Image 1 (cartoon, one colour):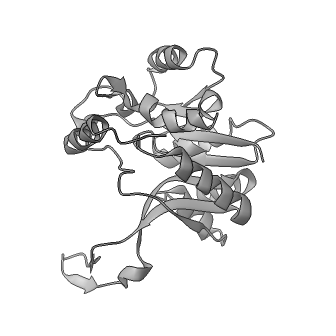
Image 2: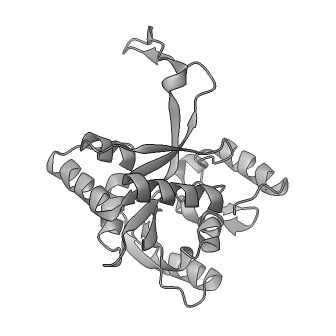
Length: 231
């Protein structure tokens, strides 16, 4: 089945203490976005990625991608006010013959090609899949006043990661319904599940971190210095 990848990269690096888009923040001298795309490049998917970017930075993204992927056919689309809006814009720009789409955070540079491939196979078989890791620690649910309300069964708890991979018709329908019902989710698999479609859980890895804070930058650069693979 024909495949593409969507990269929501519309966020700014304010929580990182940066004034530029998070995707352009360097990790050991290389932009976060390029490190994230490296695993997809191994599978031949980086050159046709659809990337949602913040307003005013098109030239910066075009220059970065042209240098890393000469002759690429990457599509840049406008990011929205929320991640969900950015993904919806990117889904509209997929090739007409694309059947499977992986949606991956620009800020997760340590995804591996093996995990991406497993997610595609799961989506091909089940229509929808998300990478996630089983909980190790006990998870506590609190109430509005900060008191323990419930302790869910740890064996049933997974921590969500990306990529989240779908048949294109399924994820587009989920976004259409969310827009119509004015629902904002924190991830795309949740939108699909709300439509009544099952989502297969695919084992990820603890190293598939999301770079969000300055501490995450320190951890990510330590991973790179230790030679953790991205592909």
